[in-house]
Length: 449
Image (cartoon, rainbow, N blue to C red; front, side, top):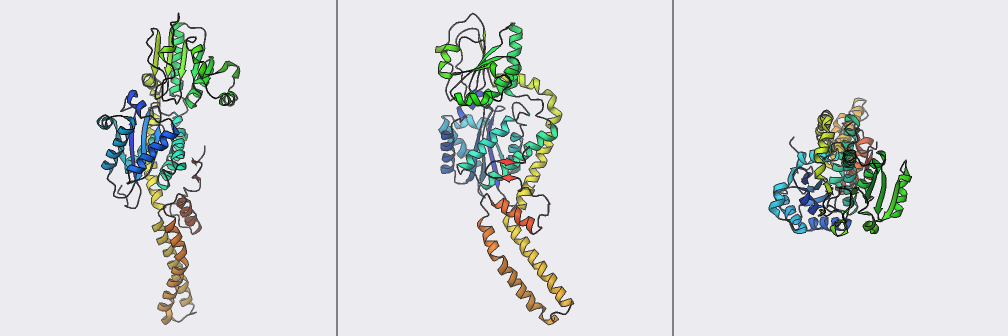
């Protein structure tokens, strides 16, 4: 599809579990809002051709989504961003170059839609990624790093993800990193003939909460180590068996780390939480699952401790998602169609075509009424030319202020809603699809399920 020059130029730079090792991904990971804001500000300061940008940082991917100024060279933007990353993360540009995936224009839009729909995830169909993208977008929007272009892209991506889930059932089987980890732990317990089904979970974020729910579903008793007792109290209210869950401050980790055969760790800490200095020899074997990026558990030096990272779970994930291929094929068809619809939509929201349509509507209406008047002989035929000029000047005067206001607001986030409303009022929406009606710019909601 040949794009009009006035349309936004989208650009994505991605490092994923498919192209980059866990060791490198944890160096790129940004888990602190302060660090994320500083990183986005660095991009803004050093990349003048990037109009808007946001960062998606999860355990399986680190991605930058951007819209570029017209005429911007994508190779130059790639080089600039890799240089910023290398300096910021103390990595080499050449190492990053080997792992990076770049997409522009339609391929960038297709990539964002695929990621949001969980088609590019380690666990295809998991729904956590959509929430992570919403949070990443909201942060960038609230901190003024993204505006109209990425608002359009991300909200359409959320719509696409909802459609994929609803029409393919790809998320119904409930496979996720957390569920696979718990399933593997249960398998280990059965093989080892461990009867005491108890687990220690460090963290109380989204991943940790999912782990806890899966453990409870498998009849485990769980002790949570965290920092926020109030958050624990709120979480317990969601559980069917709250009596099987206990809570201690993570500062008491030393007292519990050597008491449990099964451990899950999933926090946003940039440093190791479980260190070798805390460990003692035990008479039982231990099985630990580190689901964090950067990793939270230092590689154990003691024997009989078996540590699983996110990447170690990949073969187990593939076993669990093998029967999703048909749903995945259908999902990619939806994403491809959504990519085309997205460009049709943003073309329909351009201000200049709307102004042209308004003027044409006024001209046709004036001409129609003039011909009626001439036919009924309300005015002499010889005055037709003069009356046309008067009507032309009249609708130009009438449309002058709306035209100025539309052009003035063209680059604001609200312009999409404004254009959609005007098209609806004047019956100018040729597609009969008002995509802006369900768009909430500030709550990041689109077609709620």
